[in-house]
Length: 154
Image 1 (tube, one colour):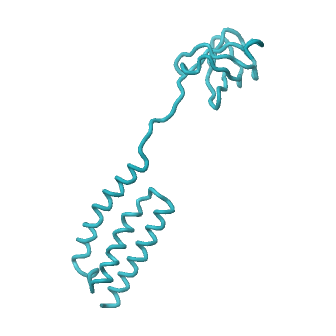
Image 2 (cartoon, one colour; image 1 turned 90 degrees about the horizontal axis):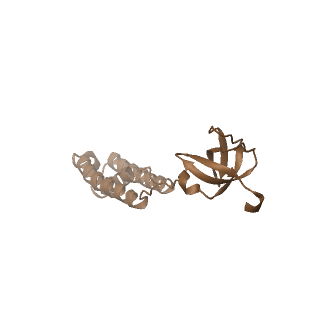
Image 3 (tube, rainbow, N blue to C red; image 1 turned 120 degrees about the vertical axis):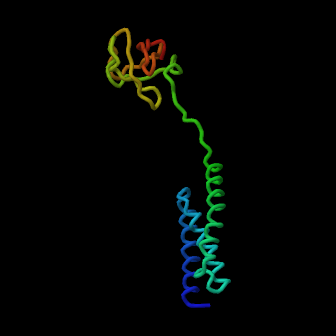
């Protein structure tokens, strides 16, 4: 076996292993495809003299790359199946309580109310100061309508 072919085969094996390790450390980067192709070509090159220097090498690379790519994509699709995002709609907030973070005024939506970890634009029938506890009594689009909590509601 020629020194060039042996060196090339060993380089392919080493680079292939490094790419597979990098893929394991950072999944989803698709380094598994070139890593697998290089590893297989390197192994064949070590077994068969001057394989990497023949016209068979690119053909085998293509034959290995296609199924490896398809299987990798299928694997990652199965691994990370999409789930619908969780969102809160304003209508689901009716009855909940929150805290005013920006003064709520009648007739405008500049007021802000914090409900859980979200902040919503709010309006009210009367002015409500920052820090006041409020109850959500309605919603319109992405805005909420609030009333101040009475002491007996606490």
